[in-house]
Length: 387
Image 1 (spheres, rainbow, N blue to C red):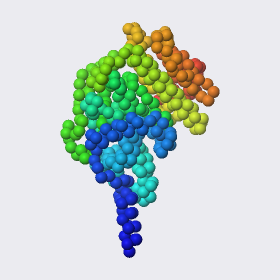
Image 2 (image 1 turned 30 degrees about the vertical axis):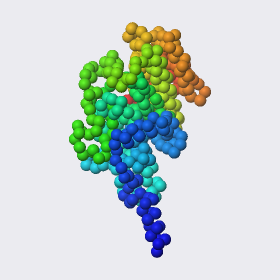
Image 3 (image 1 turned 180 degrees about the horizontal axis):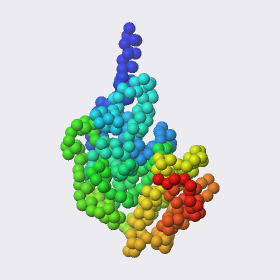
Image 4 (image 1 turned 90 degrees about the vertical axis):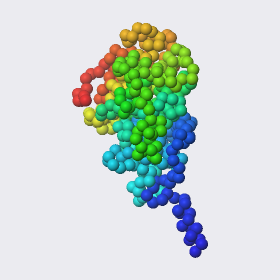
């Protein structure tokens, strides 16, 4: 009888209750947020989804934000509650009974996959609040959200350096197990209170009015101005001033911006290689949705704008042309960028590609071949439809 009683006790204490993915006995707080931030800084690395326990989890940009919060909540036995994008009146909670039919060891991964399947950049707005721009509240684990229709983009804050630069981790579409990109140069700013810097809403504060929730602030939307690149640079400079502990030299700014250019080009290469592999598999023109996955006009605009930001630090001439790119090599060594791998046998020089991109001689059409997309060959005109 005693043995049977002990067996029942062990089962009750050692496994999640029916109707829960895991058990939590605490709430989110500022101290828990700081612990989450420390985990993001130290343990959440660029290869998080290609090596280790969570290798193979397919993520896009919004998935990165949700997955980081969900995984940490599970590991720390904290509550995880988000709005249900499929319903205006329901929540998705770690206490769900959806996965009761599975062994306890399988529930978490099933829950993770489900959350990543139903959420997006648009649902992130409902699960977060705009946050005050301070080193106390804008910390690793918070994020920057762009809202565009029908798509958007989200970037996870990895760290904020002593100069006030925000360093981000990010993924892209389509969802894939990939090495994350790290960047610190931005080419967009908030368009509305549904975008910009945001922090997670704590489950216990879900039913409070937004202005009563911890960290809520609309200060970042003051004096947004126009949406030209000069205004965008000024907005980011203002946020950086609020976060900085010391001034950053021009040399440091240029070096950091050039490194972001390197990262953007390498990330572009990942997308194009994936597109080539996908096209070889399907042997047909890409659909509109597939074209959104693998096209690069948005990525290419970001590269050009980052290039403009870099050049604005070393020349007063705002007219971007191919000759300006030589300033990067002669002044601050774009040679720090490694050659870009474009297939198993071939690489392209970063400066060569940047010049081709500025001249409009590098294709962003995912139906064009790899050489056309890197400016190594003039586009022949794809017979596939363009969207």
